[in-house]
Amino acid sequence: MASPEETLRRSELSALQLERLNRQLSRLSESPPAIAERLASQGVARRPLADLEEVERLPFMTKADLREAYPLGLFGAARDQVARIQGSSGTRGKPTLVGYSPSDLTLWAEVVARCLTLAGARPGQMLHNAYGYGLFTGGLGLHAGAERLGLTVMPASGGQTQRQCLLIEDLRPDGLAATPSYALNIAEHFRAEGKDPRQMGLSWAILGAEPWTEEMRRAIEEAFAIDALDIYGLSEVIGPGVAAECREAKDGLHVHEDHFLVEVIDPETLAPLPDGVPGELVFTTLTRQISPVLRYRSGDVASLDHTPCRCGRTTVRMSRIKGRVDDMFVLRGVNIFPSEIERLVLADGELAPVYLLRLSQKGPLPELLVEVEALAGADGERAARRLSRALHDNFGVRMDVAVKPPGSLPRSDGKARRLVDER
Image 1 (cartoon, rainbow, N blue to C red):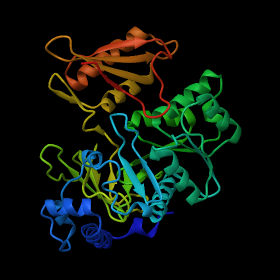
Image 2 (image 1 turned 90 degrees about the vertical axis):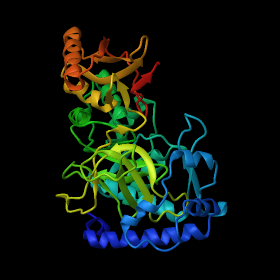
Image 3 (image 1 turned 180 degrees about the vertical axis):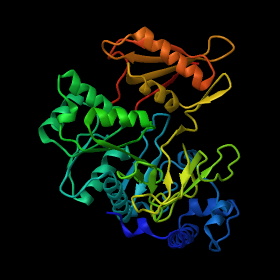
Image 4 (image 1 turned 90 degrees about the horizontal axis):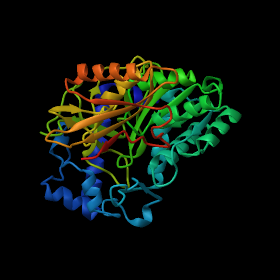
């Protein structure tokens, strides 16, 4: 059942957002020096915003701002008010750390509980949580939201797939939380043991933390005979729980706008984009106390849709993430996201839903090798020719295709690494 905030009239929701945004700006401009100085340096007056369109006069924030303020520079509160610290893995350097007050943790659990409700979870059910626990926000975020909703949680974390399958087979959970690629890995492991993943009792899955396509959704749903729903979040905003799809429509992710103000901008010009036009998602936290962000450039590419959903919710929906601004690569003048190639791989009935892209440059122009696996018993050479034609027809550039033996490409225990840049 939708919460009252998810079914507000647009005028009521906008008024609530403006009230909360002005309250946040007032608090930030008066207390935490780092954020107050940032606002002052950008010429932002302390007067309240007259309407939501004035948010465009606020400065953008990026991950670089968080890294420069490492470790606690933009927490927005004294350290003794921080109940928990989490953040990114720091695979490209120092981690970006974010903090939570006790009320932030309550807020986080509430929005995740909403996401689980959207996916079809109900009190008394069991969730198998295969997101990693630790500094990464996925595992603990889903765990707290599930308990808030009244679910029994199996904190399986990531990896040890054989044990994951044993727990799923023995405990028969109703729901699965994981990355999409790892959900397919679990299904593949069941089949390798001669077991049917459709007989394991799952009825829904809430999947995210990496871009995925409709074709991958169909592959997961067919593998387990379930409904697979997308969830979105990022640690800089709250963690998982910013938005999720509803089971009724599976047509865009409902953003919890009473807590998060979302925009879409052109990543080059920084100009706002209208509904239906993909661009970079930008978020402002309206109620978060520790580590608030103003116009945070997520780096994720999606579009917005303000039309009401058939589930009855009136909140804006964001499209499935197309990719990240920094994951897009240019091949002979054509902009390409890995997810666009994934769609073609998964649409081929003789190829496994596993692939790896190798970008290299041995001459004046870059080259792309698409590594895939043929299904057992399939004609690999024929599948390679078919995929090569499909890639050329879709992108207008030549890409090499290599078919590998079944099981030879790396499987994901968490976020899948799809692109290897060897230039």
